[in-house]
Length: 450
Image (cartoon, rainbow, N blue to C red):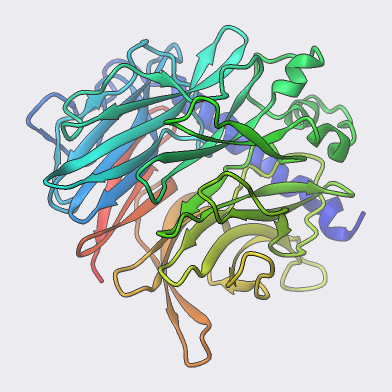
């Protein structure tokens, strides 16, 4: 194993601490701790449900219409999904509505928030679709719910096709296809359920080994039991496996184009426990997919899951933009390895440009990407530096040689901020993130003008 692989335990240790912190944050809020109440005609910013820990944000927008969805957890760990809509580009939001009908059923984490997407409708506000991971008797399943009245109410939830099997699943992403149908990709552990492995925990089996001090099983062989699945919400026979060998605790990413293309990226487990980002695309609305392509030969050797998946966007010219974190050598021969954030682009989905580093500070994690109104690249992520975490933003503009140059700026100055999400609104960019101390987190948003 190379030096980066042997020193990767430092990064994983930090990652496990963050996962544990997220669990604590989901259950530690006392009834009197939340100061903002979602019960009026307008939802205040920050967003919080009284007496709950609020986290796991997701955003979508169509012009000036935007929707924020998030999870709110009680002190005993019961989590519900909420959504609120804005008609002025995120300047103000209407009152929030609970999305799920079964109280406390949601099973969320920083890399698997409830996902929201908008289906355009002529003469009406878009239809809102929310997809989330829910607890089930034999593991977890994926649920979806829709609203046709700007998040004032939601129809009864429905199962995502193919997610009803025994075992755990999650880390889903959703997008709207050319015909208005909703496409979904997710990570699935039904094969572990078949083999008699425990399905009650959503953590990757290798994380369990690391936390207990045991040597993990061969990561490549075990990863073959972890599947990348695809389905359309409107077709109950549409679910199918795209590949095995996926890294199970890293978020997926999906995008579509106006010609029926469907694009997806994830973190894959290659020979030698290498955890690099992979990609595949469909040119026929998801009926068939090309063989997976490796985005970059980073060779991140790791006996565990980084809990850091890729972000993906496709522009009008069908150029594919991917952003992801990976481990790199320190600045000097004696310094520790560190995480860095990278960008790559592809014109055809078969070959990507050499990775380009995005300027960050500290340890960057959990990137998201969107396209700006002028075609520029908008990236948000969180950074760990100087004993805390904060959210940063970068705008990538294309230079004379066709390569983007990223300019970084911090967008949060509070004690702790993490897991940002962003979306383009009609006249700018809307960013949301989880904010505050452990056990008392809220959701904050900020508009960034062009």
